[in-house]
Length: 139
Image (cartoon, rainbow, N blue to C red; front, top):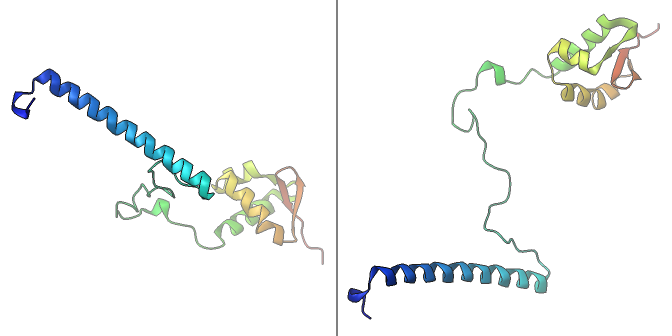
């Protein structure tokens, strides 16, 4: 059979068989890589996917100008807000959820602030679970 005499049915069968052959070859390559990794002791990626952090999506990635809402607060801004709110709360103190609503910061950020920066300030005392107050310095 020559290429000029191939019927459409025979051509379809040829395509199906070729596609099946290619998929089987991919499977064989994957198995060979896995065998090589077991023998050498080095991990080999089974898929061709890229590893690492995915590309950024958003205004920065597109080269757009960042609006005022996404800018960072100046250094120490959360500290000032938290201390002012705790002083206003007085002896009773405040829970983190109430504090975060009052100052407009996420709960998680307030928790992190208390565990890092807040732990270095001796005037801040933990009253209960996620409950803090300022203990005024006695002179």
